[in-house]
Image 1 (cartoon, rainbow, N blue to C red):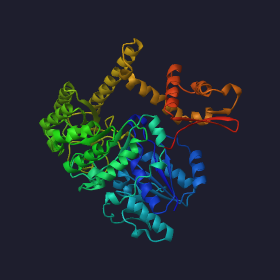
Image 2 (image 1 turned 60 degrees about the vertical axis):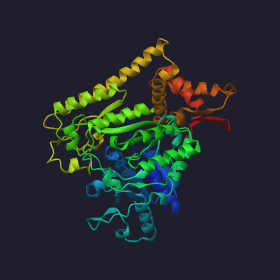
Image 3 (image 1 turned 180 degrees about the vertical axis):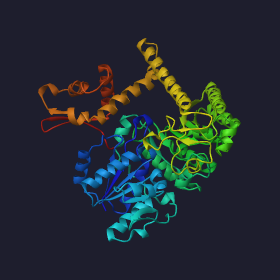
Image 4 (image 1 turned 30 degrees about the vertical axis):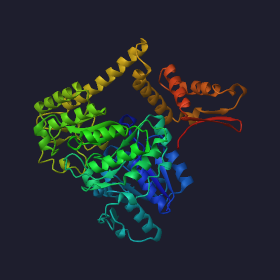
Length: 528
């Protein structure tokens, strides 16, 4: 079976990594002999013409899209276009949103034939085998589908042994575009979460039992990623530090190999120790992100977080002592939130800031599948919108009896304002010549990212980066200068910023120049 996998649009402001879940699906499919193509709408502008051309060339038998809640609308739009172009193609929707809304999706959207529920590797392989021999779908585990007007759901497959999974097929992902945009690349060392936070679906998607990968395999993968030129590797495990022995084994393997790589991880504040953090720092860890959620002890108990504020302070201080940057994230609008609990959270955030801890605020998004959504009537919550595009956790779509959406929005907007002021300060110091290159780099890199992203999404290299070669194009810098001139009129940025971004991309070899057959042709280094 020829399989087209689809990564729906996701805003660049959310710092997207290359789609690891789809890479794992592609690896499983390729290992069982299925040709796979990946359409990445995060770094390629989507259009029906682009999809039609891809489908004409690849001729897929099956098209599968993944989606979180805020991307599900675009995933459904792309699958609708797939069906419009070729109704014979079997379409699949997976990911956390589809898993917990399978019946509603199948009842409302004819463009979806099958919903894959939970971890998808074994499910998709089984589905391709059933399609090849025209076998009944009842024998495919972990799916929901329409059958004679009814919705049929099959039993889930056993959770996979992670060391038996095929390696993620990252060669199908346009990694070069993510690298050019300054995005990190992600990997995992485990799956599973034993905790029961009421606002999260992680445990329900990947199981309560944490499954670990062989540390040698983990570092093999990390070593391969370190050669790709990304500035950072994110360990996307829910709880990298949950198992001390596993965490130390991975770190020791990195150290024993002499691997020099920068990476980050997530952790709970009650799972870190000085020994673990020192070893993580020695192995290249630069940042640990903690989900603190609230500065109110009562709120932490209500949401079943299972931590204390003293543990938070102890954990972040340990990070600071060990040379790791701690980051704390908070969720506003949890059940029972009041003006008083918000004040506690803000005050605790300022306390952490004084300790040198970065922190940020999001607002509760009651995702399908979460306890907080299922039992909303029992909690002190009102859901204000089911427009899934608004489920990005940056603006309020809920209210509690004590706090309205405007109050929560104001806190997040103030955080955004402070970030903008920080960038503005860097800009002023740069103009005055009072900042070092290192000090200005966060602003400069962001400026490069914005220009490069606009060029990608406007297809400027495809439209403006090709012209007949002339004598004036001889010399390494002349085609680059002409490219800058040709695209500048299409970009709403200062000319010097456009030039700096394109020169940076060229210097880093994110751009490729081809001068053959009488044509100058610029392109992005899409695949690594």
